[in-house]
Image (cartoon, rainbow, N blue to C red):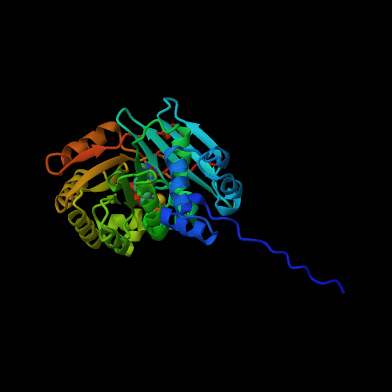
Length: 354
Ligand code: SAH
Ligand code: SF4
């Protein structure tokens, strides 16, 4: 009889990008390493943007040699990077462990660089005009996969801008992946890491009321954007099905609580669909709703999604809608459509296979 050999396999090392500095210190401690190494590693990766252990010259050679077994410094590889013709917008298709693909977008205007991050692969909420919604939910992203998007896009832009904004407006409903989202935000905010101020991070939600309340209690000045898109429950039930669970009165009460508690205006996102929600009465009701809380309205002319038959209103109709809102609503902006040529505009992620 041959004895059965037991092969000792150690679990794969955790992703560096999924660990807070404290968690990394504890992790290194369990391997008998001094905890201050965590701070040094954070500095190499998040300040000096250096991920090759061989180049981390102030770390002992033995530590550098062991890095591969301690933590995984690899980023999800980009399967495609698409640039808009004017180079202002780039869409990244990153391949995750297990083969799932996730998309994220960088947008540069004269004033700032913004990274639009995904929180899930696909989305379960099925909004009627959204390409990601058509995919259904594949899975939640892990913390490291959220932070990894920032590092991958920062690298691509060679960290030229030390200040950038983050919006969770990519694939998925961020508040449906609450724990990983908050862990990622904690890592992004670390002053010994990327040192992102909470004010420079905005979370967009289709309206998960309990999580909005929870977010209001985090003691962070995160921006909150609510995907409103309709001013009556009848229409919103159709456009944003999660409205059937938390209708407008409850949603607006939670949004108001957030704005007042956090001391920031809540953005009300309103995707304009021709002949559906772009009438004068819609504008009047929207202005009224916006006045009930510290808010600003962001109009998003619909971006076409293959297979869906909604129409974007003519430019004149968008202007007329904004003009009707303006005297009564606290603040109104019209979102410039960046990235439409590369299917990277709002609601188009997941709509193109590469
Ligand atoms: N899941 C989050 C973040 C998503 S995307 C949320 O729903 O809030 C950012 C915004 O784009 C949301 O307001 C979303 O409703 C909107 N959107 C989705 N599809 C769109 C489309 N085809 N055209 C314009 N806006 C769209
Ligand atoms: Fe999901 Fe947001 Fe798309 Fe709705 S709009 S399906 S919540 S990603």
